[in-house]
Length: 179
Image (cartoon, rainbow, N blue to C red; front, side, top):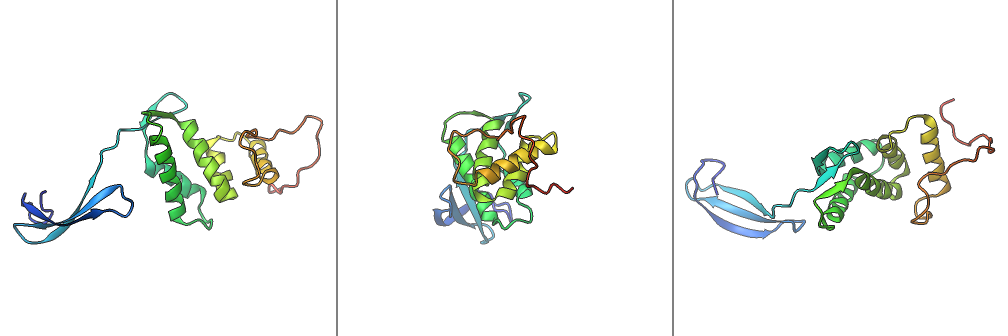
């Protein structure tokens, strides 16, 4: 292993242990040239996981991009960054556990929505507005109504994703939409 201080190619391992997550081996090394110590990590090279977008494009799964979407959705909410990291970790592990090389972006989005809904309803609605590309306020209203009618933990697993109002139901909704 090349020393980051003097570029000497020779070093010795002083200490070796698993990282906090168990996903890598952490090694403390000492350079045989300058005597300085540095840390290296040894990880298993993961098989690439490709996400197939709505338009058919494929891009490699990017946990930072997924985390960024979660951070945006949870801005100014009382959600710890560790909780968002856990969601990303859970989703990535679930996807890689399928032993497939491609997954549809819709599946990733639904996994995120499921976890966000039980964590924070506002973050869920924010994420849904981008993920589902709401065309108007009525689509957002339907999602909000669904959250209000079916709080987290009360919806059966196979329930429809959106509640639709009947054409003859003209009652005013109890939501303040900024009017």
